[in-house]
Length: 293
Image 1 (tube, rainbow, N blue to C red):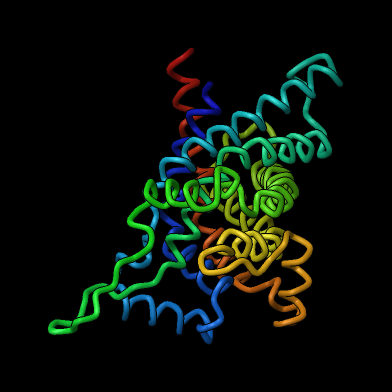
Image 2 (cartoon, rainbow, N blue to C red):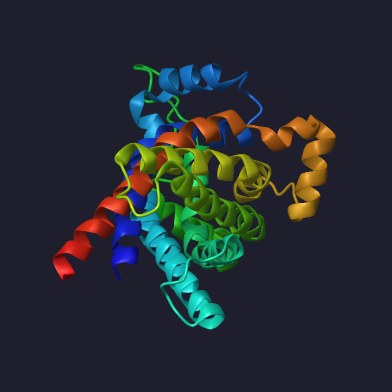
């Protein structure tokens, strides 16, 4: 239970820290009207001011706290069960393969929870409209989606329930290997930075979490691009028939570098976000252990 609670709180804090850069990343990956990161930031601020960077955040904060709880809880329970089956004891140090397999399974489970919220988040982030209407103008802009809940209900009405799982296969391909790498790299770095038998210092946890996040997102970026494009597909007309078609068409039109659109932003966002996630996770685990002993 402690792992579920710690993961939930850590995930919620992580979303708030990294959301503005996530919005910029999604827009760069799905729209060809931006010349780069700074152009996207400037255009977003000019058109929508500060609220533009936090579009659709309420949904991820609530769902990520749930999905992060599931992620960390599933990871820890899988690891415990693997240790029981392989070694007959929870006191044995798990192997790197055990950690990798547990992270892979945890990534698969949390995709089922995050997919609908992720679709709504991406649709809201890519819905661009001015922060305020020009006075005296006869043009009145009404956004298609008025908020996360309205976005979800609109998708179900127009595209059916399965519309909430657009890009789910790409999300699975992104999250399973990236979370396996995420937990493994954190365990290795933490072991390297923190001597055995010592309490983990804050700097060791922060650096381990930050670099683990960067490594995982570097691996995840190609499928993250494809996932975002599939989720946005259908706003006007459908362009992609599936994951493979989206990959081939995107590469044909924009070259191989399209698969790494936003990789710098992903890494820049991943470092502070996962520093916060793992630090919060470790702190809450320690607090719960003190309260229960």
